[in-house]
Length: 450
Image (cartoon, rainbow, N blue to C red; front, side, top):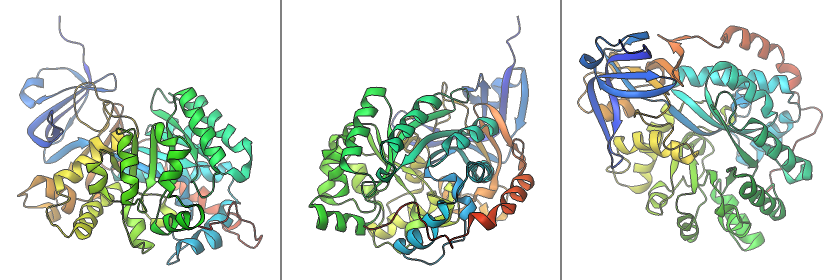
């Protein structure tokens, strides 16, 4: 009896693989067999020559690698891209972003999320962690377009108990949605907008319902200095005293993490992770960046992120991968840190671990979900190839991604998006911009005062 056809076979590629020490390697003339949305095997082209398949991709001249993971973003904020430029953080929030966000409708969020998913699928991203408002609309977009997402309904204490309750309701309602492509988290905004009582209640809910938590904390050194001046504790110490460091916690940014915070983070045994988005830190001229080296020594996973496109204009995790390597070299004063292979490791396994999906995504390995991108390395900017890791991190671009697969489904093939009509989304979104960007009402959803 002949074997049942595989759903997809990719042949002729060079595959990015990991060994049992989680080191990066490359397998030449590889073949990837996909069945039931998962990687069945990573083998050689000869081994699958006679194996039947519903679909086949000849990927000669391309590298197959795990789809990148955007560990912290606000996808609908692509609608605000370029609106708040060259401003200090406080003015960015108070004068532009938070007044405009008071105008947001669910339709605005839906269209922004749809455009963001198109950008990420075209760029390299197969999974994103989002923390925003009207997240039912985002979940619907994720289910429709085929990408994977880790979603949380953000809340402030100024919303009263209803904000926290809605965050919980969302997380429970959508957990495991979109055929398992949606995972969820509780999403308090930050220690400076959520009270200790609400953070404590959130930690209790997380433990009761088996949910992770995703929030901003110690985003920049100014926030940490203000917290110390006003309360005598760092934002990380606030997370500790409210019980959040005893949950599965994803911290956005962490550029204000101090040496005194590291023992607390180390004590969590890897349950606390940090998402780094270096482009935004450079754009805001923050004096520090995420201390990846120290966090690594403390056993804290660090995943790659972009933040929202309103702050850094881009959802390009490929750029985040390259910038993370370059910025870390500059901060350490050591060209040997962070290497291209280490950057690829953070883009794959570390990012998967950061959002609680280690063992499911982040690697091309049997049993992992088939979240795969094929990268064309035939362009002049990538030749010749002396060090494939360096070529991928520092020479290739997100526009070199030819094909994107999530859960075994092809979402983009040869640069053609198959699940989102971009011109239609852009036309409808741009028709809605005048009332969305109006700030004459003088309202804002919150005040940035750290």
